[in-house]
Image 1 (tube, rainbow, N blue to C red):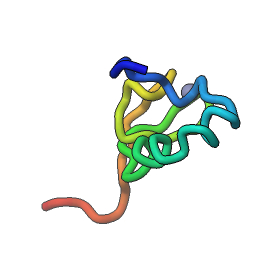
Image 2 (cartoon, rainbow, N blue to C red; image 1 turned 90 degrees about the horizontal axis):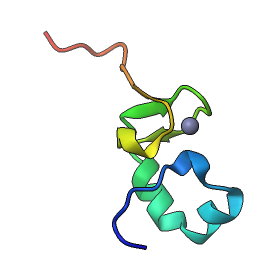
Image 3 (cartoon, rainbow, N blue to C red; image 1 turned 90 degrees about the vertical axis):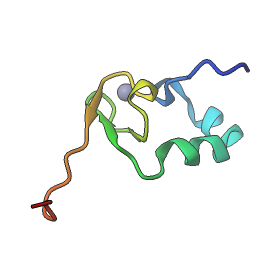
Image 4 (cartoon, helix red, strand yellow; image 1 turned 135 degrees about the vertical axis):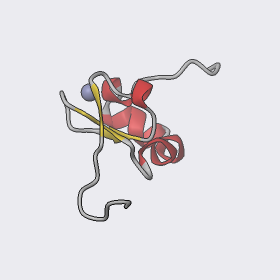
Length: 61
Ligand SMILES: [Zn+2]
């Protein structure tokens, strides 16, 4: 395992099933969305083509 960050983009259904808790940790409160496969993550390096999520609506100021 180690602490090398895996991109969830490369995870197959089985990988998600086998690492569900980790997957949930990665996708909860997402800050980035993958422009290629539509996955989301709270860390840019978990995605193959990460784009920061810009939340609309409630703006500071
Ligand atoms: Zn991706």
